[in-house]
Structure formats: C-alpha cells, structure tokens
Image (cartoon, rainbow, N blue to C red; front, side, top):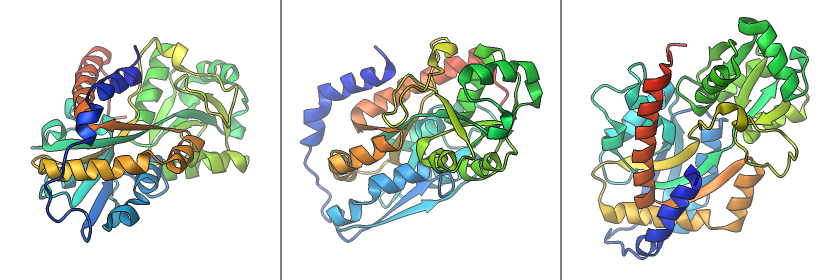
Length: 328
C-alpha cells in the first residue's frame, strides 16, 4: 500500500465521527478575519494552492479571508509566526508537509525553540503537488533519456534550479542525483517565481516545478516538459515518463496542509476543518486543482496527524541514512 492509500485508509475509518462533530465555538466563523500565511512568494505553487482552496471561504462562512505571503528561511518565517500566534483560529498557515516533518531534523533548517510537530496542529490537508522536470531549450534536449545522458556527461556544468532549500523540489533533485549518479550544480532560490524567471532566461538548464508555475513558460516556448516525478498521470500531458522508477522506491512528500497553533480549541479546529472540507468537496475546485497538476487530498485532521507523525519518523530515518548537505 503506498502512502496516499495509507492516508485514505486511515481517513475512511474516522470520517463519520470527524464530520459529525458539533461546534461549540459560539461566534463561529462569521464576522471573523482569518489570515492564512504562506512561506513562499506570490506566484508559486504553495501560493496557488492556498488561494485556490480558500477562495470561497469568505462567501461560505461570512469570514474575511486574507492570504499573506511571508517568504524566507525555507518557509520558517511564516511557520514560526503561526507556531507562536495566539491559538484562537485567526492566524493559520498553509505549509508544505515537508516543512513540518523534515525541518526539525535538519540543523540548518530547524527553528530555535519551536518544534512544529508540537507547536502546530493540522486542520486539513489540501493537495499534493505533482513535481515535473522541465528543461531550457538552450540545453538542447527534448526527452528524459537525452537529459540523463547529457547530465551525466557534463556533470557540474549542468545548472539545476531549486525553488528553495528543504523544499520537495530540493529533495527530488537530491534523490535524482543519488540514484541516477548525477553531479549537477544545484542552485537554490527563495521560491519558485525567481527560479522560473532565471530558467526562462536560459540561466538554468533544468528545474523541478509544477504545472501552474511552469505551464505558462512551457506554452511560451521558454521551457520543455520531459518528465513527472511520481507515476501520477496528468491528463493534459499524456505520455510523459516518470522519474519514480529511477528513485529506488524513495518518495518525496509533496502534501500541503492547513495548520493552526497548538492549543487552538477543538471547536475552532472542527469548524475550520468542516468549512474547508465543503470547499474541497466541490467539483469545480477538484477540477481546477487537477487541471493544474495538483491532486486534492481532503483528509480529516485526525488521520492527517498520524500521517505527519509517520512522515516525520520516515524523514528522520531517511536523513540519517543519506547524510544530505543542506548548505547547498
């Protein structure tokens, strides 16, 4: 059973109880201001997921919804702000699961005095992003096989962009280097948009990105898709090969989740969860996410909490074995 099937199995067992929980939050969401912090810049995939999944929240609940970008420090600036916030449901975070489950195990990324596994509580998972490999036309390849051959031949001359240190993009690049025997130069950026600007300008040879971020540049002829990372088909791009068989069974966590500060009353968490779940159940949002290479997750927070604990243990073990240098 793969990780996503495991999550769904956990979710199925508790779904009825989770959805049926009554809210004791007297004021409810109506009239409140809900701020969602995103740790990466406007225009990146995290920003897209946060805005797409909260777009109808104000209309459905009567709340004022604000998505605020606080990029920097591998997402830690936003994550620390939420972890230290008053636990009343007014300040939330939309973070990649990897920020929460990996960063504490990496000295260069760990927050001082804040353990996100203890300082944050998951509300609901929103979507998995499907990472894709794109190359610059100037690199002179059009297929995955051609890319692998040229990357092995040129070694450190190949400039491979990273959307940030400790991101799924970074992990995928490290796994590709490890299992394919590559020695590319990894170039970190503070988010996807500045990385993509350099990629479009021919200053990078290849990047991992996503359909909503890279799609417009592919359409403009500035990048070319040559592979997906997982073996998850994208309807609009049939026939792209997957890198998954090259990664020896190792996976890159790509989930994105809404978190609240630890200590937030259960009634608040339930109401926030139920409001977001209703949005994620709408066919229009599901279609919009999938059209942009994102897979809706929509997992109840009790199942998600266990998944995050499992993922944290997996990442701790993985990092101990591979000894990754995160100063890159």
